[in-house]
Figure (cartoon, one colour):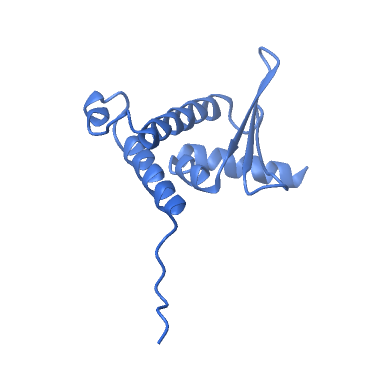
Length: 128
């Protein structure tokens, strides 16, 4: 009888731990130093989670500030499984481009206002 149960690959387990930490950081109120004390930030996985959390928070702020009609667009990268979010800032004539994994996009879309803006951006792109 063959053993059909498989152990998860070490990389998958590490990714799960990484995004679990990111989810916990995002679920807490902003700038709560007590939440940061829970994690050992000398651990590379926890440091990466903190960077992802900060990156997503900054993207949220930019998306909410600029909205879909002012230059937020979202497309899928044809060469990888990443999602490209572009945020155009007409005031200073620049464009911020972020490449997200599907899991990072799901975390970003947990904010309903951001999810609505991204949904409108996709609908606007499809209509064009």
